Length: 276
Image (cartoon, rainbow, N blue to C red; front, side):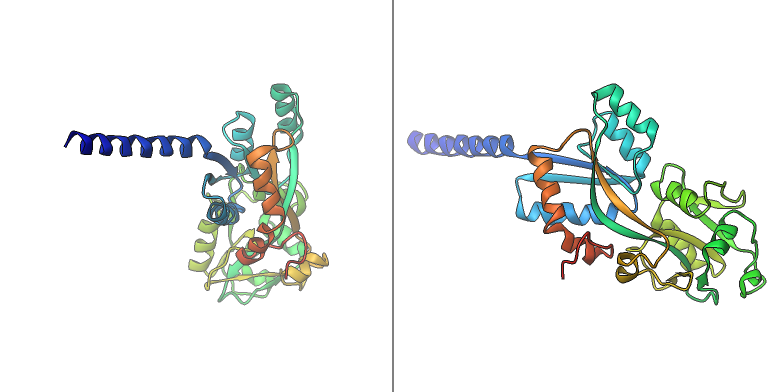
């Protein structure tokens, strides 16, 4: 009997030892930032953990600014960003780490303008788009639609998409004082799908049967029009690290730049090169 108990105890100790060795060998990658990139980062994390089960990859949204702050404070390994770092953000990295940060291009995006599927206005020039979001055009009949007020929906200022749109569409002018701020791309999608008079913006990968990705200058956002630069609102998506990535983060980023590009297309963004 005592031999049997001793054998059981020995077996348990072996299991604990194996478990401890396994845990000691496990590693974690923390990613935070762009809501535009959230669905992409989550898919990358999910697929990478299938092939590297000893690696835990956590991906969160919250906005590009939130991700950059987390990188500066050392709370994440990788910041996902939908815009380049600003000068003051680079300065903060330099002051704390004596490093300027390292950017890695991971995908390309068409910044889509969403309108309701029942809205007859589905083609806008860059000039008209600017006038809508600056509040200079206030009703749809000024654009050939119904005589209803335009419901302008924008992201919060901590969003890289908010800043990118302001810089590249509004030409650094202010958004309309009548614009409504929503916390995420999905919330904008849902609001546009529910209201025929709403308009908003976000990444090309987000979709819903109730919305249409508006043509801009008569060009629809697509992989081909982004690649040949005929669609006028395109941008790169970034990973930022404090320094040149090494070890576990480096292997993950290398995978994103190779096999992970297939997932970029599957999610709906544009891979850095043709992976067909």
